Length: 276
Image 1 (cartoon, rainbow, N blue to C red):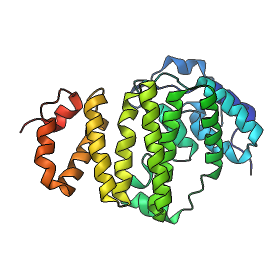
Image 2 (cartoon, helix red, strand yellow):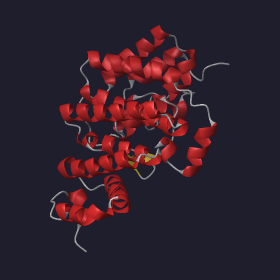
Image 3 (tube, helix red, strand yellow):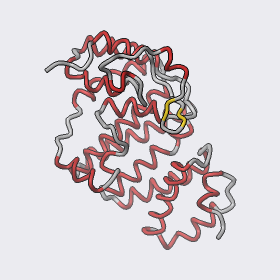
Image 4 (cartoon, rainbow, N blue to C red):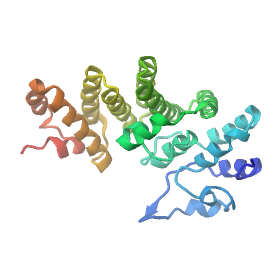
């Protein structure tokens, strides 16, 4: 079996870096792409959300440790150090290196959950590569990168925990999400001051562990109130999920919970907690 591109082409793709692309409808409108020559057999000719994550994933079986480190040395130099306004494409790069081309893993739908239960979740090569990237991020003191890597690894550990009903994996997932948030406070990545807690809530709810799910749903709401920068639909949706869970499983305290946040000035919170 032959790789889809050469190692030299992968080095070239990686040298383009990772950046949040601008879209108009379904078309990519980003002048930085003009500086990235097309590579014929690369995924979408090297132009896609999260490049070069997909190509790295498909090349992992063909890379030895020395080649991995060479790719990582380029990648870490190109990786954003300052938290961007849009994290989606940057996070996609890491998610793609796990071979996860759809968001949310087992949380995406019951159909995906059943499908993933039947699959053998083999992320060994991905873990080797991303653990080396994590080590290099530490050397370069890229705290934003460390926060993102912890969050992305937490998702995959959470998938394994839920599928295998593995409490040890669940604890590993929880520790990683909390580590992601700790790094976020350090580098000022506002999104990651609440989203790791939200995903912890979702995985604990799916496991299920209602006590932990409630703890992280409350923590998510509290941190959205403190740190959420705007009221984009994704943030509002996450907040609504937490509130719905609290109402269902902690109804006795729900009215006081509503009262606490109804006078908030946070834009995202106001969308959900406005007086009716």
